Image (cartoon, rainbow, N blue to C red):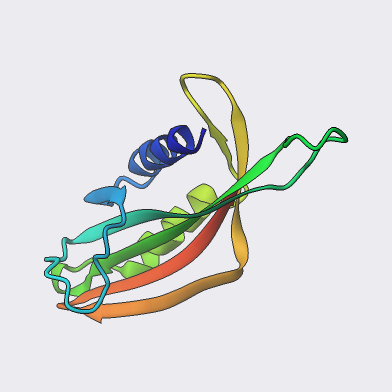
Length: 135
């Protein structure tokens, strides 16, 4: 289930925000000392949590929540706007349905209450992060 959600999330972002040059799993690109060479625009996705949100009377899990951190940004030196890219991703995801193509299962996506934060500016690349709940 988690892998299917992750893969579908990447596919939906790629299809829905065509200005993004790169959409893939986060691999520490914004960590201190990384040698990542920023592109014109990018979106990285990191799985950060999973928990049951509804339990049945027999103790088994019903609905579950998967939490992702979504890193978005763009390179000002390449005339791209990080705010425009980030806003496009937020508008695509917040309150939307995520439908897994292979199974037809549907989940609701919501930007979490802490909102969006600026996290980095390196080599002209401005980056933001927000958390996404998928239930």
